[in-house]
Length: 472
Image 1 (cartoon, rainbow, N blue to C red):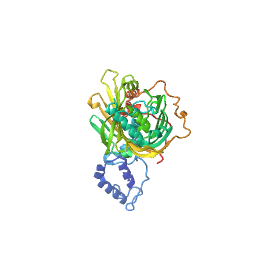
Image 2 (cartoon, helix red, strand yellow):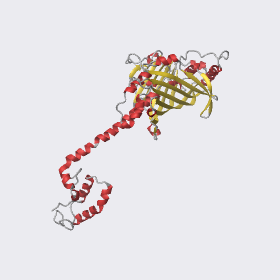
Image 3 (cartoon, rainbow, N blue to C red):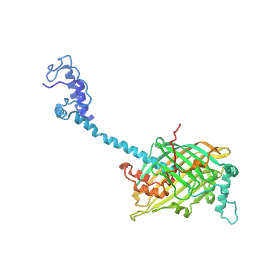
Image 4 (tube, rainbow, N blue to C red):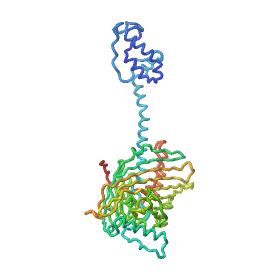
């Protein structure tokens, strides 16, 4: 006689076989009827099996996993279950594990790649040209001077006056700044398809940075975002940087200031940077009338920053100075690099554009310092067939928490480069070439995004030190 089954044994059999909802609905009436009859002893052998005819049946012990003795006679499930048993069930569960592990690993890899892209482009880019703030600005003159140049000199004189005056700014021997940042990749475009980050506000990577400066040309920055740390510095003769993916190395080209310092943190260096600029017109920025100064990097500097098959074609910076306050409220720079193919094919071009909006000026010891701002970055790759063009957009917001000038005890020893700097130098062009070679690893869904990441110009990176914990 067929062994009778308890209610939970029957239900366990249905779950173990993984029936779909549709199949479960088709069999629901039969299952309910069979269960009811089993409890009353009115089916298949009546009261012959272990329970009485009217007193119901004792429930079978609960087992985790498939019951090798449970099945549906119509489909031969009992025979199949007895044959396969526990071993097959465990193997089936384990066989599904690699797919979930692969998905998790792919997601983690994409997050690491996005973070590297953010840090490589926005973390600590350098200014276009060499600057020495100790050198006096050109004397304001309108005789035998183009109107564009004399206008720019006048605008810079007004900027220095609005920032606190040249005398006060020149008295600053060193400066300390601490702030926090949030970075996020907002959009990626490839082959005419645009993928937007609809949860950008929630996915933004928080971080903190510390910046030290000392006259005339020494600086050092530490920045930590999303668990990754980068740092860079300059001792007045050498610009060095350290990234987790390239280690410590010297930057190629002349000594240049940190772009982040020009974002309303160092007025004297900013004025010296635009000393050779021209006034090209006016424009409204956030509803405020501004003068526009344009600074172009000279060919000698561009050549010194180029290397091998990669050539830096141009690096242009625009400064927007408010006509109302005289302060710098917007800064934009565009950087174009060409990488020639080793096989003789078409060259690949990389253009990086950074737009920074500088806000919330407040006096600190008599010097006007911008206490917040935001940057929008576009990284555009083109030059091959149109379908291979890619465009990545990123954003950063920052807030300044502490600023101090003439800090006691700060000396040149604080700006000594690390001892493990690699011999020679690594310019942005070599880093781009390095990225071209490292395309393996990412899953198919993230391949285009990682390709852009690998080839990003890490020339704009300068990093250091220990992780700074976000205390908010």
